[in-house]
Length: 399
Image 1 (cartoon, rainbow, N blue to C red):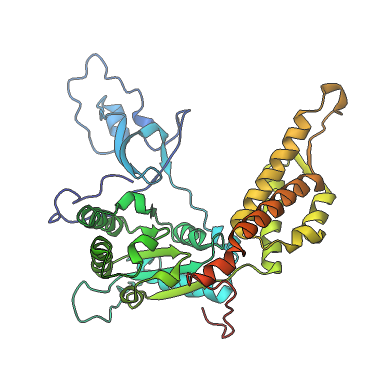
Image 2 (image 1 turned 60 degrees about the vertical axis):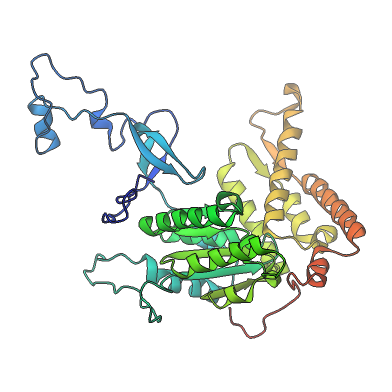
């Protein structure tokens, strides 16, 4: 992201932001700045003034001399940096990512409809003016944002939801953690104000992952935590954008914050059918992306969908991803260990049942070990500590 207009002086107007996809070497010879690459003025050129139109500038031997770097914001590193313009290109958004999100369709519809209010363009192609989001608060600039609380056990798609929404709405995702903000109340207020203002200027989708530290219940004995929670509550109330908060400790939240949330979505643990959908997505992804290097044996499919030991495990999405990635690594290593004379011409690595069997065995052993130490599985411990209830089922059909 480039330096936003008006960033240094709050009184200056804020213009629309520009987004680029940053690529590494080799240089993009056909990029948007390629026509200015390696421009060398001729010996008789007296003026470097740019005339109207790129063609006129070339015909009259007049050049626009620009430095090769542009200041921008690295969304992953969350730092301002200098980027080579030759490696900048238009962002390619994966608008179909939300289709891979395993969630009830009515919940997806709720999120899309609420987010649309804040991401609709001012002048769409049809020419109809999109009205600004209506706010119910009588105090100006208060309560104008849309705050989502996504809660549930780990690995059920909370963070992935925010990532998919950013892709679907073609907005930058500003993802923060506790480490980006700090726990000192004075510094936290300054840092939060900075991040929230940047998100407003860019029209970004903001994600505060594992937001528990800012939202835990206040107590009489911990004044620093009380101050931190109060600072967060005040800043959030005046935020005018989209904010996703994720947590797996919703039972520890302060009551004052619950009233400031616009939409709460509970993520239940995946059913067997939902787990099968996730396994299938990874099989298809591997087949599409590694078709030239690897084949998927039928035994792998059969093991994943029929093996009793594997089916007993309550997999979450992150565990399935890690298990699949590990199984692929086993298959690749087994193929590399073959001697050249043992390989047939055109033979590829093969993902088989034995690869998933190794992963399943390790997973069962580790889960059994953890259950033995704590006297119960993660769901039981969370309920006893009043952190969350993984067995709760919403039978009303609502979000």
